[in-house]
Amino acid sequence: MNSDKCTDSDLIGRAADPAFWAEVRINPAFEKHLKVLNTIWRNYCETDSIPALSYSKFKLFWTTGDRSQYERDYFARRKALGACSLLAVIYPEEDKYLIKLMDVIFAICDEYTWCLPAHQTDPNVNNNVHLDLFACETGFALSEIYCLMGGRLDNVIRDRIRVEIDRRIINPFIDGSPFTKNHRYLWEDVTSNWAAVCAGSTACTFMLMRSELFDTQLEAFELCMRHYLSGFGADGICTEGCAYWNYGFSFFVVYADMLRRFTKGAFDHFKDPKVRAVATYMQKVRLSGGTCVSFSDAGQKFTYPIGIIHYLKHEYPDEVRVPDPKYAFFDDGCARFCTHLRSYTWLDTGLMLPDDEPEFSEYYEKDSEIYIRKTPRYGFAAKGGNNSEPHNQNDVGTFIFAKGGRQLICDLGAGPYSRQYFSSQRYTDHIECSALGHNLPTFGGVCEREGGSMRARDVKYADNVFSMDIAGAFPTEELRSCERRFELTEEGVKIIDRFDFTGSGPVTERLITQYEPVVDGGCVYIDRDSVDGGCAVRFDGSAVGKVHVETAERDGRRICYIVIFELKPGAKEFIQVIMDRMEV
Image 1: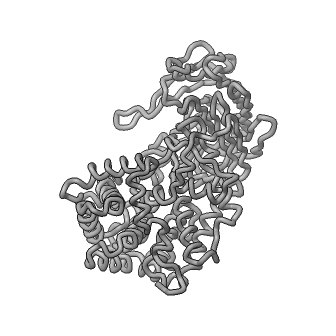
Image 2: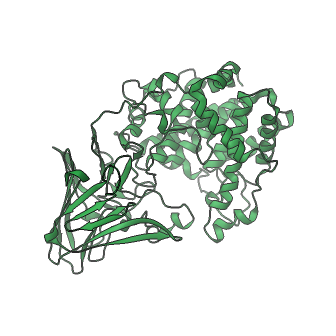
Image 3: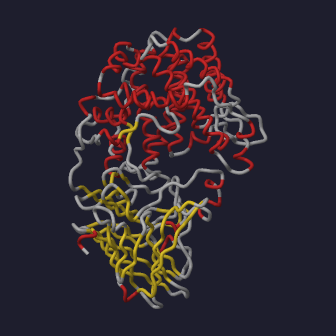
């Protein structure tokens, strides 16, 4: 490393301090961390074998669309890599961890490519140094482990890491992509999580392994980060969803921290008001207990990266709230080493306290056209937006009603990732992405369609009313207007749809739930046998001709129930009131 730059110990902070890891062994704050590590060790490391990454599984993505079989083995290796390295620094006297770590590194350095099949540019081209999310992450993970372990790794292992990082990360980034006219990787020009993860991982790899070259690439990395931040409005909302905030913004924070260290404070992204706004996103989208807003390809379960949130709390002490530690995660299904490492090194034991959530909060985020309310009785979220958002689902005007830590009227979130899921079949074969899988109306058999022109109009919030016209999301001129109005009260939500539809055919409204609904008179009861009674939906029976319940299934498994209200011919309005079960 250049003498005027940081050393690797400066860049990885207290991870370089053996005394810190000795404290981890005995500090009760890390008890859950160690439990997770030992579980990973038992599941992925105790056997002598390391999963093979076979060509037959590799090509499944191109023949059947399946990603899961190859990725299961790929991520098993990454889980073993992270667990062995952390166990080796926490328990340096135990040789088994270091031995297994070097076996895993040796195997990863032997891999045909660090890129996933789903991200290969052409299945017929021998391109084994393409930079996707996971190739970049692997290079970054090996770089941090290289610095973390130091001379404890055998020389041949250290040399292999250096050689493979040069071959698979450093040189491909400098040379550029051979598959684009301008030789830039596609993720260098996007505003999604790819920009933060790929550029952040690659930049950190340069800082750790080839610091003498970093300045020559800094502008390229910073351009990627400008693209990434431009994907957020001033409100800081991540339209990709919670999981992708956890993913992309975590890598951005790690990059920004390391860049500030590397440049001795000359670059400080944390002074940017946009970054400050994005830092508060997770606390806004938590709805009720352990559930959160799941618009786009997100999940319903509320979890947060504990080290990242603690770091942000120190950066923005007056803005960032720290959730209860029981919602924190330390590792994830894709074994992202940089966040796992920082769940130790950035953890602040003084912040591991019960929730400081206010009893009532609401957010109207004008840029993203999202409204969120949390009360002691329920959580609610609704969105306008458009049907070309990152990880888009056809969902303009949809909403969520949550209570008791669960979504009673839900947004299903992400479907199973496959080649088909990210193709033209996304909206026809996957109920999660289709408008028919959201809490939306249909007109004459026409539902919302995908596309940037399919959007809400006249979105506004005032005096406990969130409203919009969603007619622009329907590809039919026969729907002249459809005002959707959410009136918020202490007990629940009144939803009024007023529409001007000149076409023929039925008008329907639908509710999506994962709890069995019961239709009784003018009410739909959802999860009414639960301890808290679930919720009830009263509807205007004068406008409804028939109510029935369908189910959506995949591979013999029920995905959800769909409550369908068929409106009477000539109806111009539909009213439903969602309330706490005991209030009906």
